[in-house]
Length: 196
Image 1: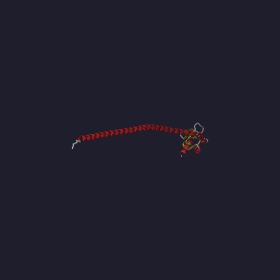
Image 2: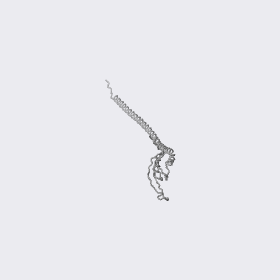
Image 3: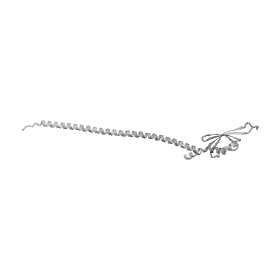
Image 4: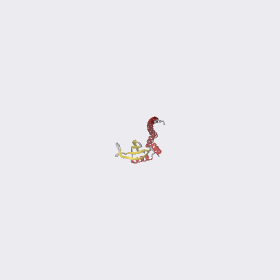
């Protein structure tokens, strides 16, 4: 029987399988590198896209913050203007009140009473004058209490003095007084009514 040497054939098979193994290994390695590269590129693109979206959101947020501050400033200006308008409206409504107050002072003044000064602080009136007697001062206070434009009369000071320069032995006497009263304000009553 002839002898056949199969060793070179086996060595060639081994070499072929080794080459195929290394080629498969190299192909797998190249495939893995390509896959990792593509995944990295996709992830990088997604991160860049998200960063771009974040930048757009930041600029929009900054614009909205500016608008919010502008709106807050406008609301403060609006409140200031509304307060001014209310003050002007109150002044317009209270404008004729002083005329009524002076008219009521004249109407409440009994005979024998003279006023020397009137001072006003807000709605508080300080009325100074002289009267022939304390009874006339009391009548003046009662008239103030009945008035539509004045209320809460309060006698602060009464001094009885003798008028100098008269020929009579004791001379006529006068009662100098200070009365505090409050002005009835239609404008403030309207605000109280609106608040209720």
